[in-house]
Length: 312
Length: 227
Image (tube, rainbow over all chains, first blue to last red; front, side, top):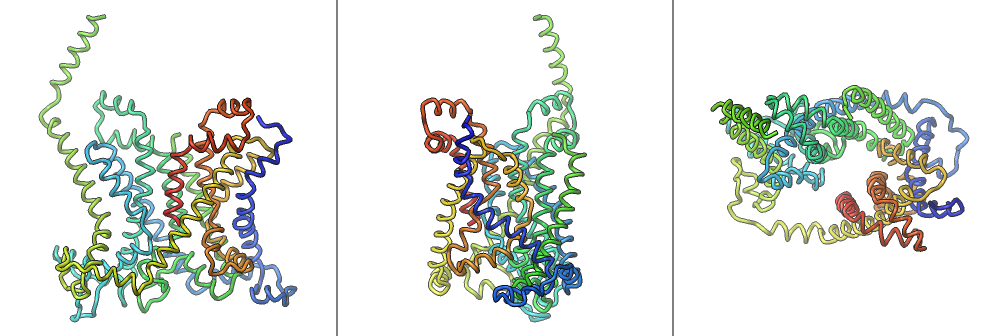
């Protein structure tokens, strides 16, 4: 291999990446921690070099985060969205991947369709979802129910106020959950299908010889052999779920709630973006660190569970 | 030996006879069910796209109809011309294309160089550096937003293309992907190139990059879509 006097060459190859990472990744992490622990940090004062001395270290920012008006709501919304969407979308993706893997004709065709949501922008499609659930008009004067309500009414159901002014939290949440699942499916199907296609066919041959019922093949062969992929999809799903933000902006706009109920659907990331324009970087940093702590703990729990369940 | 084979054949035939009518019916039914399930899911996945396209072709009054039409009565292309003229879409497309192309090219160069160093070159602290890179993948991006906002502010990059490109150039995920791919290329090629006196850099561009082309293409597509 290369002898040691050429070591500097290796660092030359690495230099662009390392410089950029230092500026835009390592420094932000350190700075966020520093800001979070500075009381009364004020960016204007910092820029003007005023009163720098009066900044004291403390946990004031964290206290502000927990006392922040929408914090509990944001935490609840984030948790509900994550806990519902991750298992449902994983299970659906698994079923679709298994079904896709079991067919021969039209497989590529269906694969392309299921991949489509991946290449779209979550804000743009969020607006389409909003249009589908949108109801124009009030009471007897409703001029348009929206296509989803039309379908419900076609089957004899009642028109529901999904996302408009005065709508309840539950319909709001249902719309968001449907949208997030729709958005999350392609990536999961892709990963799981890739895993399925690399599974050794001999296991299935053996099961066939023993005429094992399909359900047992699924639970005893497919799922265990696929467990590393499933674990990966679930862990990244949880991380992504706790960072949910743009899907809510897509459907409800940056008010983060239906008209008249501003912030009722806010998430933790939404809260960070809320406080940024107020120049309260200390509070935003502390909120980001709280989010990191939550994600870290959840990921650790996921890793522990998957250690027991995953068969490598 | 052939006697044994015969025995197996007889057993096999007997087994075949065991397949009852119900079992014979079950297989096509399962296949039909699979296709039905896939078709229904595909419809659900496709519907928002369909709705987006046909809504863009409807007149405002038809769009607001009480009973929606599943096919526009008259196809209105004027919505598109209007979007281009009033929404300044041309400029927006240019922005997107410019940022996408520049950041993809720069990002590819950086990724190739870093992945090559991590996969093939020997230097102190290689494993530690690689572990540190992987660790940054676990940190939520929101943690960087605040400081990066301040950083680009002090660099005076506000409202320039630079701000859309530079902070997002390095992706540990792509580096990781490409490093794994580079590692699969046999080291003998590298040693042979060394014997011939090829420089590392020439070897990287003439051998490694062509061999890892599929991965590079998928990275290009992903980065383009992300940008």
